[in-house]
Image 1 (cartoon, rainbow, N blue to C red):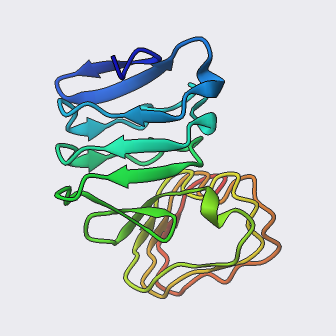
Image 2 (image 1 turned 180 degrees about the vertical axis):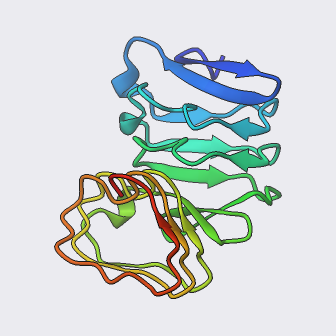
Length: 169
């Protein structure tokens, strides 16, 4: 059974919580079941997912709430026909590429240029990424809670169109 080292709490298609079994530090991959249509903000919180190398997202997932992957630093594998999310250049975006859901370990410590067209950076999207430099696009209007928490940013220029910055961003 491919899910023997982890379990999910799923209600009405919403993945509410992931539980890793003993030996969680040796779990390499997590495959989200096809029965899941939405990932809640707590889907992978407090489950030591920081040690997992890969999370597979099926095409059935249509919604990913901000903060769903905040401790995760591995890579995403998105099923080809999935239209709700895209994984590109170590960043998981909404399907229309306007919202950053989560940056992954490949960006740790590197300068980041967020592409034009991104309007939202989700909660804890760049959490603990050891970033020193981030360039924000003029299209950005929202920065979620803790989006850049636990980084090494000394300075950041905020675009004029920015409407809201959540706490601890």
